[in-house]
Length: 425
Ligand code: HAM
Image 1 (cartoon, rainbow, N blue to C red):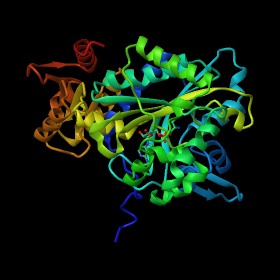
Image 2: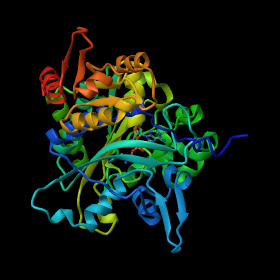
Image 3: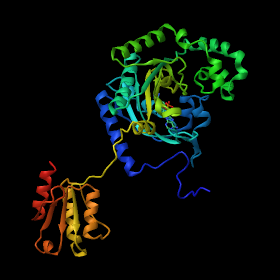
Image 4: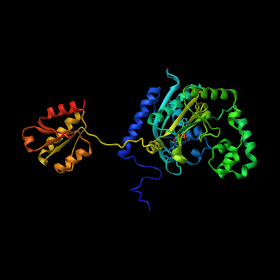
């Protein structure tokens, strides 16, 4: 039986120090890239009113029907841990009237944990992290292309290859109803062969049947009419515009007419970036345009576009390509007191070194000198400061260069100056 006190909940995991160094590096890369692209960070709460997700993501989606962590708080409010962040960003955009700010469009990015009651497996968790961007207030395909370019630049900059960008258009409320009907007419004779999920999708959300992974549904939808052939003029022009921009930027893409995506808010552009070596969970990035969402949440008619990258999946991809350097701890200097009596002086020196901006450490376990030097080596310390009885009496330290083994007796300030000079401070 699982020991509840020593096991994290199913589908969650700890990010331990060796891994957190990799997370920090990735987060730093993302922040720098977003800043170059003119996106600013937004941080929204991890829980919202349940109603926001029901309305925003759509009642008939798997996320809302099966995957939300919903609870009633002590004030009898229904709240939900965010399963994604687009709805929250739209809520924040409206609540804070960001549409009224001078600089438009509003270009935002976020990073943080999301929660879905999904069946856990490699690359799929119940608490996972997304990096995402949302652009509100611009309808032109240039913002779609810019967002896609940002994601591609991130992946390529990290060194990932074997990526495929899939794009599609899922139309808009003008052209979609007629297409849905055509699709239903095509699928109706095969209704019995569809998987149970798709049977119930047939009336409510037939386009989702197109990207169902079950073999029966794939067979049934083979040869089905395609949304791309039924786009209204506006959607058609938008898609043509996007393709022209991607061509101009030399971003290769593949058109996937079955790419529908699992959230109801999408209009026009839908896209996904897949990293095939990840197998079943190969989507490292998914996004699209959601021109109706702001209005649906009660705001002014405002177009939107965005995407989210699954950070765990991205790290898995980087690991597969051996692009994650092992995190090693490196300190500038390690202080080794020879005995208990020298510890207070060593401790004061340690804090002084840190105040001076150096990465410094000492032993906290009362180890022998030999063991302390071993520890200094493990930390890849560049210098050691040895402090024995005699040094203490003379207010000196023995400064040892661990690379050259050169050593000299100096006072504390001289030691700091010498180390700083060597470390390029
Ligand atoms: P999504 O496709 O549901 O879209 O999620 C985006 C990405 O999050 C996926 O491609 C995947 O990498 C990662 N992801 C999703 N679920 C899990 C999970 N259970 N475990 C690990 N990773 C996961 C959205 O969330 C939209 N909000 C994206 C968007 C932004 N569309 C417009 N703006």
